Length: 366
Image 1 (cartoon, rainbow, N blue to C red):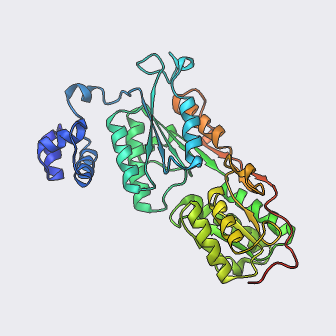
Image 2 (cartoon, one colour):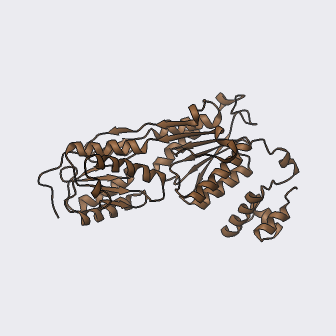
Image 3 (cartoon, helix red, strand yellow):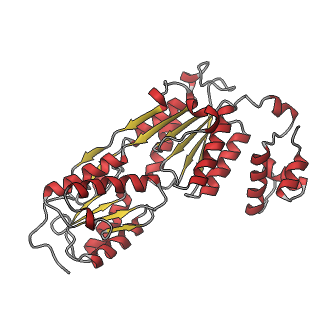
């Protein structure tokens, strides 16, 4: 039976006029109401009109790129690289060609780390018959949310969209749609393990770890790599005491490092969840009169553009963010064959610079 606009209105408990305003985007609607309408549209698989229904399996010239924080260079680099591969004359007439002769419109959707916004954007992209969707960065570790994301991606894939995960773990889709999904998974665990092994090889034993948000896959994988290295060195029992979680931002690195120094004044090294967090860690150490790396070594992750220009230059783990983003763009446009099994591991490279050194015998003890 055909779903009508009135059915959506009844489901969302609003008027048909409100549903129309939300779908057309030509009139302001309260955020909570808008979310309720979009949820009803998604639940009922509502299509705007008869002609649109006949094009249910077709795709538009729209490509969506989902990021957690567009102001974070980690996401900005990947999104920019992906966009550089979307559209353009080299795609005209090929598998990724759109109705405008190969050109496609890339839309960057900034979720702000919100699970609800992520689902809303996927709903909107499905309604617009997006030709492709690229999801960047770590996923939220919540079974209910993962199932909801998988269901939405399956609907997109069934409608003909290419789905690419860039920097995310693979995600099994219901209904056999996983064959059209390509996942470029960063080796966060291996990179973190090699980073901590580097510090251990220098002689460090009292190593603090500033982790990211607990609910993120990237956080867990990087922390697991650190734990593996510490455990292999017989130091696994101190990891929990010397680990502090927080957002992936500079303030988190600053606050967490002060907390680590409070817990262990004899700290000789700090591993940060990413390079931005490492900047905050460095600021906190200098404020406490600690020299880097003479008193405390500091290491980051990602190798963002500023990392080599800090004083001293930051030891970190390089993820090929631009290369991965560009590859995701090509996969989304059908210009590159999917990796075997749809999954490719993106390697992480240890970059040793001036911010790490052997611990000083005269390291301050508070």
